[in-house]
Amino acid sequence: MAALEILIATDAVRAIIRENKMAQLNSAMQTGKKHGMQLMEDHLNKLVANRSITYEEAISKANFSEAIQHPGGVPRSAAVGS
Image 1: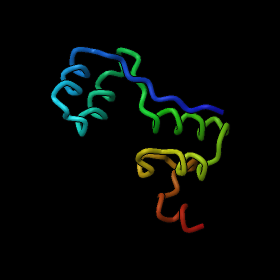
Image 2: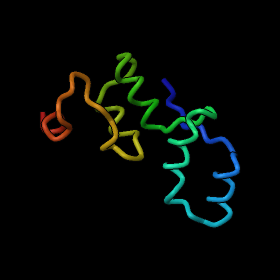
Image 3: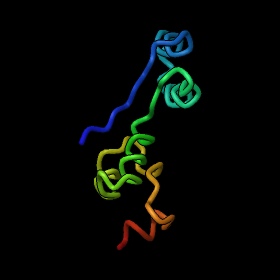
């Protein structure tokens, strides 16, 4: 199962790259969802919710593991320890 991160070269994204402000890229991608952008963690969360992958697989593949939501709403600290 593939998880995808989608970045569209909008004017804002181009400016972030040109000005080497990469720390702002995730925020631009969240704002750019209306343009078809998708963060890796958003897709991983969908795959977990659909039971296509496990929570543990999603955590291992995420760029920001804290953004992965455990099915059933179990807090991450409790889920990781189990």
